[in-house]
Amino acid sequence: MSTTRAYRGGELVEEDFPLDGLSDRVADEGTVVWVDIDHHDDAALRQVGGELGLHELALEDAAQRHQRPKVDLYRTHQFLAVYGVSMADDGTLSTHEVSVFVTARALVTVHDGFDMTRVARRCANSVLTGDRVGVLLHALLDDIVDGHLQATTTLDERIEDLEGVIFEDNPDVRRLQREAVRLRRSLSHLRRVVLPMRDIMTGLTRVHDLVDAELEPYFSDIRDHVAHATEWTESLRDHVTALRETQLTIQGNRLNLVMKKVTGWAAIIAVPTAITGFYGQNVPYPGTGEPWGFWMSSGVIVVLGVGLYLMFKRKDWL
Image (cartoon, rainbow, N blue to C red; front, side):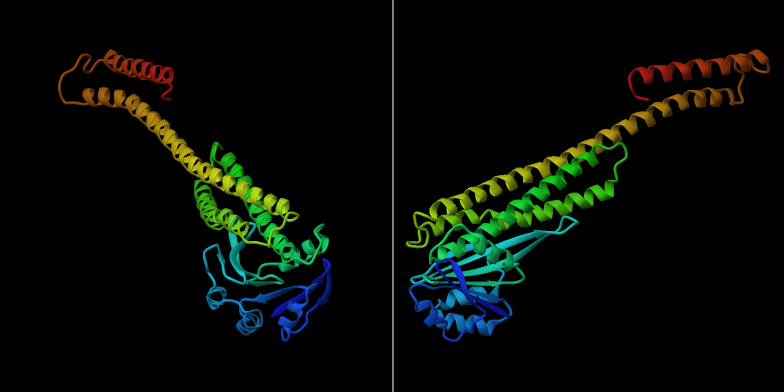
């Protein structure tokens, strides 16, 4: 249920050691510890909290879950609530909450299914060295923010694909509406986890001894990616709104075209209906009982019908 790692000199020296005695390892000046806990393991969370002296309010937030993205600064440590994201093949966005405790010599993560193996690989391949918890925190935040950018890219591509469907001659309207609603929902969830990251990164810069001169350019790069993801999601939000408005406009134009055609044909059909109806009355009319009366009425029907058709065609009604 929990994974423990100890680093010395930037290298992994011990793994999967028991939580008992965690405070002794942290007390070693040259050791940095990373404890990864599944959110179902409340006992491990309480034990780590006791070993490292974590604040009870922060422990309560980590145990309750579904916190808003934030950073809380305590006297001996910091608490972060952030969210990793992943995209399914159908465009559905999944979020994974990650609670992070940052102390002087330990990083504690509590999550509900977030893939920490990627973060471990980043730590192993990182160019950063030294016995600093900031190196571990950078690997974690960098992976999370990269996931935000990847999800934003995927949503952008799906929105572009949807644009092509809108302008098809016979689009699947039901599929189009369903896909648009799914993208709007996913984008809304993504915005809720991306927008607060800017304040979180700003709050971390106020923590003394966490981000030193060597780490500052790397954390600045994460802040730049956060700003990019924020601006991109805002742009996609406007894009989806414009997409929906375009769809409604196209539907309205097509409806108007259909109505014009129906009105034109109705006008053409009304002419022979009126003439034949008039000649069907039981009253005398020009040509009553004579062959030329039949041919005259038929000629009037043809001439007026063709004339109306040509007029509507010229006006682009048919």
